[in-house]
Length: 152
Image 1 (cartoon, helix red, strand yellow):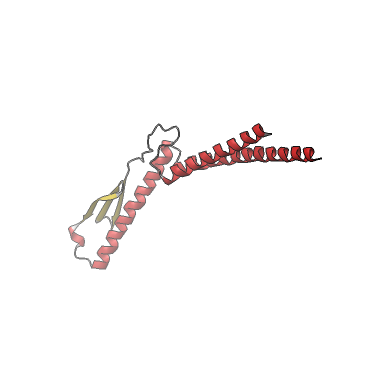
Image 2 (cartoon, one colour):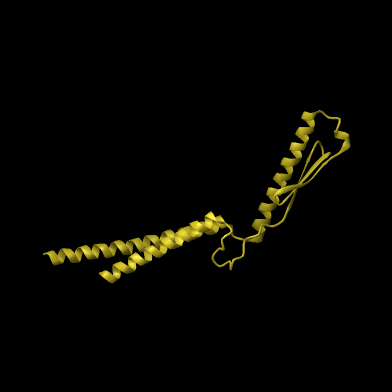
């Protein structure tokens, strides 16, 4: 009874430690992932471009910032509202283009995203925790059965 109960308890504690490790990695994405040998997943570099006012305003978005905003001189006679709308259209277009290109590049790379990996690991941990809990409760029922037999 003692040894079987201890093994079930040990397995359950191991599962909880694994879960804690995954939660720690999810909270700190820069922490090394299992099997990654300390390497971080690097996002592909893409350039998003957008235009406004029929191409007279152009914006370029790379990595995490705008690297270029070009405004042709002939639009400077427009009202502030029109100019603002054109700039906003170019900026939003550049962000949208960047997002689409980045999504496509990540999908093409075949890399498994952290969320997919975490979800798969959590399913595995869930299955292991159910097995460990069953083993633990079985050992508890065995102990109760032995105590009941000794009591009679």
